[in-house]
Image (cartoon, rainbow, N blue to C red; front, side, top):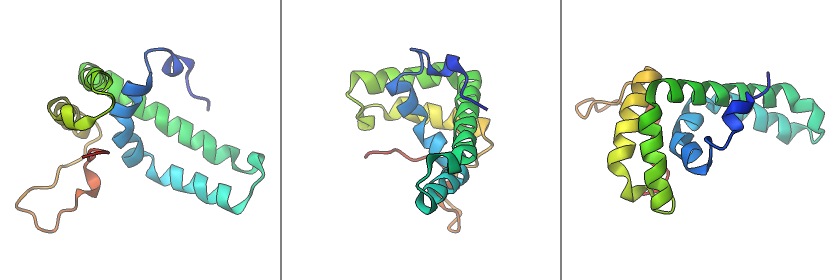
Amino acid sequence: MSLDKRYLSEKTHGPRLFAMSSYFALQCDKVNREYFMCKKDDENPETCLKQGANVLECTENVIRVLENDCLKLVDSYAECLNQHTFRPRFCRKQQKSLVSCGNNSFSILSPSREDKNATSSTTPSPLHK
């Protein structure tokens, strides 16, 4: 399956992709690892086409979910990032709103502050502090 061309249009630009990036990492971790392990084991580009297609499919699904459920919040965070040269520390309010919506969309439970056994690996975190 190829990435739908509408997701490669001008609306899916750097700031918007950056705003969604923690969800790509979280939701597509397994397929990304499979792709990189394949590439590590075999330098022939054709060997890993299936794994590459799986990465594109996962990415497309993340974009679709976030655009369907959280479009205004994605765009608000992306615009803030664009205005502040991709420095998330200036956009924490917008980021927090997007994380709340995105976690709900992907059924991700944020760890409770009281739960000492909870790990933050299930909650997207800022790429830069």
